[in-house]
Image: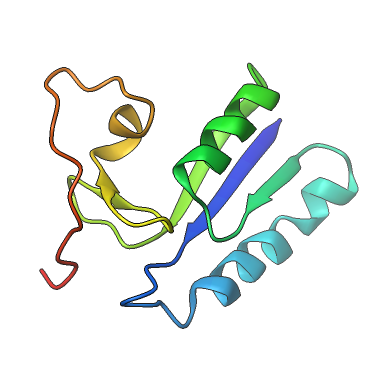
Amino acid sequence: MTLLLVSAHDTENPLPSLLSESDAIRESLRPLTERLLLTVELISDASHQKIINTFSRLAGKIEIFHYSGHANGQRLGISEGGAYSGIAGLFGLETKPRERVRPNWFF
């Protein structure tokens, strides 16, 4: 089983605990990785292209996707700027296209 652990910073509004969150998740999963029951793939400072490349490289193997970064109920922020409408938007699978804009993260 493979977990893709993605973290993304917004350079204008960084999240100070983002790296420690990823470290805590990996540490809590260490017993599973040591027993070879889980593989953790990590993308720090994730860009759209890094995420797409990792899904392509691990096609059919990723069973869990965890995103850490700026988000709300409708959008995921990524490191290269801009926002996507969830996973579907990230992969260009939205049912209705939305303009890619720089989000206001203060909800």
